[in-house]
Image 1 (spheres, rainbow over the protein chains, first blue to last red):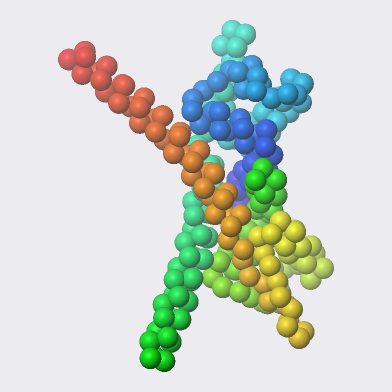
Image 2: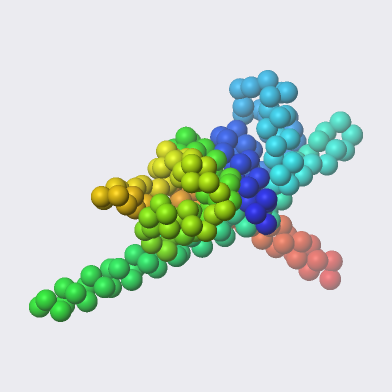
Length: 109
Length: 109
C-alpha cells in the first residue's frame, strides 16, 4: 500500500509521464502515438514509459510490431482517494472552525 | 501549474511526508508534535519538513521557541482535481464501452 503510493506519486512528478496518463485515460494507444506529442528522442521517452510500467500504472501488449499501452486505474484511484480523504478532513475542520466563529459572533449580539 | 504538480507529487512520494500531511489535515501542529510519531533523528525529519515547506504544501510560523506548522491546501486540491479528472475520463470511457457492449448484445437477441 505504502510502496504503491510512493511509486505512484513518484511517477506522477513529471509532466511527460502525466501527459501519457492524460492520453491513455481516453483509451489505449500505441507507443508511437504516445511519443508523437513529445519533442524528445524515443529512448528518452521510453525511459518515462518504463517508469510508468514499472509502477504498474501502465500495461502494454505487443502484437506483431506494435506495442499498445493501456492505463491500469487501481493505483490512480487509490492515490486520488488518499488525497480526497486528506482534503475532506481538512475541509470538515474548516467548517467546524467556521461554525465556532459564527456561534461566538451570535453570542456577542 | 506544471511545476506545482511536479513538486507536489514528488513531495507525496514518501511515507513520512504523507504522514505529516495526514497529521496536519486535522489541524496545525508544532514541529515536535509532528516529529513524535516518527522513529528518526530530528535532522532527518527536518529535511522531510523542508521538502514540504519548499513545495508550499506546509507553512510554518515561529512564536517564541515553538514553530507551528499548518497545511496549505491549494496544491493538494489541485493535484486531487487532476487525478479526479483523469479518473472521470477513464470511467466515462468504460461506461461508453459497456453501453456499446450491451447494445450489441440486444442486437443479437
